[in-house]
Length: 324
Image 1: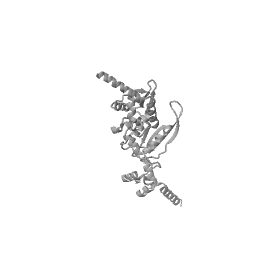
Image 2: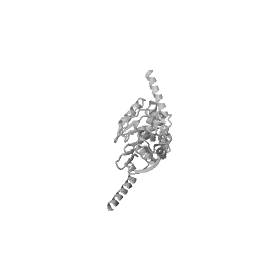
Image 3: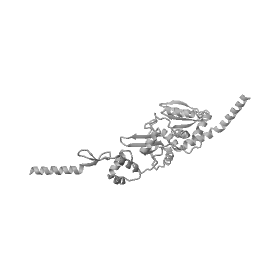
Image 4: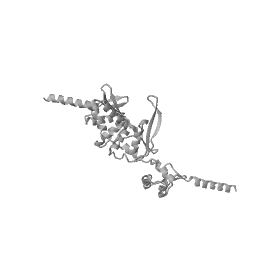
């Protein structure tokens, strides 16, 4: 009698184990059997293509019904592959091809002030831009360019340089497509020391340089000579050397100098600086407002145009005297 009772209890216990533990989802969303760890229903290639192609337009439940799976399994699988549904909308393929002024400009700006994170093990694909809080409107411009409704957030941090609290604004995107597109154009994870000039159409180069200058460039007044001067900074000397070579082809002269662990490209001289700023800012449709405004303010206050006209007249007189 005791033996029969024990056998009965063991049987009930086994049934409970089967009832509660035989079926679950692993971290990849695969449906497996606990007992022998055999896959009941592993994901087929056509199923993966289906959820990747439809997750933006279909709910988890709708996709699950099509595949005869659970909605949770579909959600987990997509998340593990880096495809996450979001309330935010934007053009994930915006940077696939750099073929417009705006795309070239933003690529240059991202070279300066953007970043990407790609971690395939945990499915984290992140792209972001962080600026000082007063440049909030510039991130709104980017949102508009990319047809997005992504929230621009603010945060405060203590500066490592002076110990003061600084407020910044930032925008983040979590997208496999966006991150991979940017990487293909040279925006690499931890990029600061390894960036090289991207391959873009020659007609778009000035827009790319303007974007980078708006991010990591500076317009200053040389008080001694009452004229504008500009510079750009980067951890990648090779990158700045390429910009220097491109500017030289346009008769814009510059030189490189060390700034701690970074390299600066300096552009000085009345005529030389005027040519450079006309090159990047004339007839352009997108720019950082405060830097563009500063350029035009200094252009007027330094009387650059009139001084160049006077210099041209002097050169013409000198040339006529030599030919006489």
